Amino acid sequence: MRKIIIDTDPGQDDAVAILLALASSEIEVLGITAVAGNVPLALTQKNARIICELAGRPDIKVFAGAKRPMLRELVTAEHVHGKTGLNGPEWPEPEMPLQDTHAVPFIIETLREQDAGTVTLCVLGPLTNIALALVQAPDIAPRIQEIILMGGGFFEGGNITPTAEFNIYVDPHAAKVVFGAGIPLVIMPLDVTHQALTTARRIEAFRALGNRSGIATAEMMDFFERFDEEKYGTDGGPLHDPNVIAYLLEPDIYKGRKVNVEIETASELTMGMTVVDWWGVTDRAPNALWIKDLDDDRFFDLLIRRFKSLP
Ligand code: BDR
Ligand code: CA
Image (cartoon, rainbow, N blue to C red):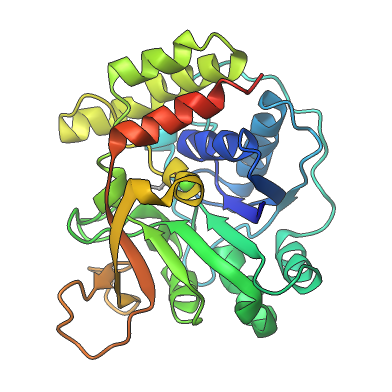
């Protein structure tokens, strides 16, 4: 059983990632921590609870974390995700409670309580909560089994600026803390997530499941894909965040390389760029497994198989 904390800013693709984790018996979700990103924190923490209830898991503990990035003003992405962050289906108001504790002490205490090397952080949004935890309690760094995160782009460039991907751009200083902490990192950048496209056939497969989670997923994708379809001229949009959970479940779907990755925080022009030494032209030590390719049919097969078991 892999123990994980999901740190997230839902977001339709975050929602699908959360559903995949909750549909998988090999994964124990110790808690979900929300962060400001796609939409402000008041909405991301609420959206996380909506998704837990959709999955029939009101027992999951959801914590609210940072309201804004460490140094910069919050940048949001309603232009992609809609006003609520979860546009698409009609959602009921969630009834399950938000935990009283702040996300950062929850992350710290959980890593101190659990056996060292047994908790993985799955990060689907800006890295603010994780960096704050590492700054406040550096002793947790060697206790983290692994951080698997969606963020960055090298071969594909950026999606919020020509050189920066959204999650890293929103809080580049937090990303710098995390990438420099000596923790095993697995990165799901745009290079790979842009190959995981929600084609019409794939969306229909979710709808055809006939359960409420499959139908809501199809409706979320119908809304979410329109922005990138128009931008890139593709059939379907990239389903970014679920790759983090799919990697935990079936890592051999993916191919990558251990490389050095540094975060640009000095230049306004290239702020939040992930500078990847793919060809080993520096003597900087590798600090991350940079995923570059996936078997997209296997990825969507995995999602469909797991979503069958959801309500
Ligand atoms: C990332 O940014 C958000 O819009 C998505 O949820 C994903 O985490 C993609 O750049
Ligand atoms: Ca996200």
